[in-house]
Image (cartoon, rainbow, N blue to C red; front, top):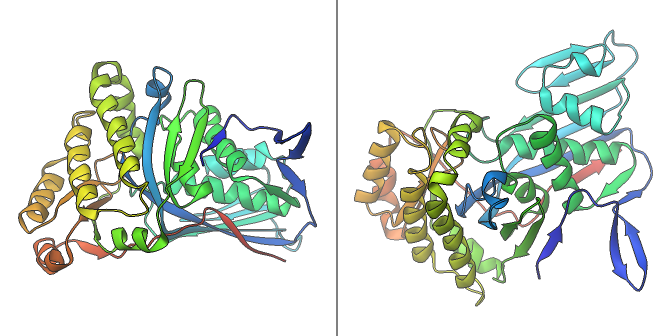
Length: 357
């Protein structure tokens, strides 16, 4: 059953004139830890941008994976000189929220009106700018932690919309909505994006065993190159009107894969062919999607027996992901021996509060 989410609802209808507040108050903890998954997408990436879905409906088939962003929020001790301490790849010490250089942390604190003193720490399983939605997972995880810190429970739909608001409306990032929804909801989903920004989330009707079988056919390799998605997406946004036919086909491929998931089974080989087709179309969207290094490694993997693959994220770097039959895994690994192999597992859950003390 699909869940339709519109911009940050203040309540959720239960029918019969009853409404359930989308934020529920509970006891206020002094420390909160959240765990938020990263994601991979199989088809439709790029149709989640407003430049496309405000013309016609977009769709992405994606899955969350067992690689995470962890966020800790606690009341900062008054024994320290600074009211705000923020730890990520850097450490910031600030007297006011406005002084924070980390745009996401600053705007999340502003949005939820969280007063210092406060301590925030974040660590991820993957490098930043690696094409797996890490920035959005951080946004979702931080918002989830801050709500819990304020004694509030929040729905996955509102959590995703708040993250979209922070990244797209407040910060003006040229991104879409798939990453925030994948991080908030988790699982294997068809995400549909409609004019005005409404999003529907349709979990795929397949068994856990079927999804694990698909993941057993995935191989992911680190290119060693990090690139901010905004640099590629800015060009892609500018090309949207010229590339409508390509984007429509990419969206339709997401629908087609969705249809193949409805009989409670998944054919990994069909997914591999879809990835190959998606990658070939994705390269048409912007000049910086690929480069000679990526093209060479992609061809090596295909020659070694991969069924298909794609670069995760907007392009230019990050991870190359392939569908490979078990009997060909060693050959593909050998062909890409100059790249680091990363094992991927499936994550059925979205952002979670692991504990609040």
